Length: 286
Image (cartoon, rainbow, N blue to C red):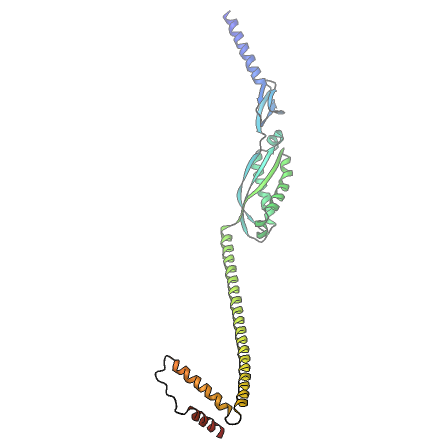
């Protein structure tokens, strides 16, 4: 009786274990790859699945979520022989788990190398300035270049982004020196243009001042002519008009001399008019 009980317990345990082996519950976000006697049999979808116990075996558990692959930084040489450092990040999704696990040994390693190789090829056809300013163009070409290749592995490339693309440290130092030299050149040109404009304005100012001085001299000469004419008309021939004008200027000069801070004493001739006449008479004799 005890032997029968033991056998029943063993049979029940075997049945429970067999049911457990044949029933598979796949969580959401995963697909399981089943092998039958070492050969691919089917792919289990999320939810409750039944397989043949002891014959079927879950060989791989593959996620169906988007996978983010960080592409390591690498040195890339542009068309104009400049070394730049570039890295990227790729977003992939596995749509055919059987192809992903059987089509390539390590699909993540393969995609990383494929992105790096394509990135070197794309940037190698561009100049430095184009490579630094054309991230969207590089992204488009890169996505087109690798999408078809990874499709054979049952993988879809959602997108690929260029994280960093910078010149090497040596090139950055050269670019900074070039930028500094360019700024210095522009400053020198600006300063030279400023000095040129200042010189032109100064010359224009002198020319305008000379022109106005000449006009003023003409106006003064006309005023003196008119004064002499009026004085002659008023005085007649009794006195020379020039004697009057010279006397007026002589008195004005003595007044300015008296108002000067340096003047200590001013001596006036007893007969200013006779003195002026004498001066004019001497000039006329000469």
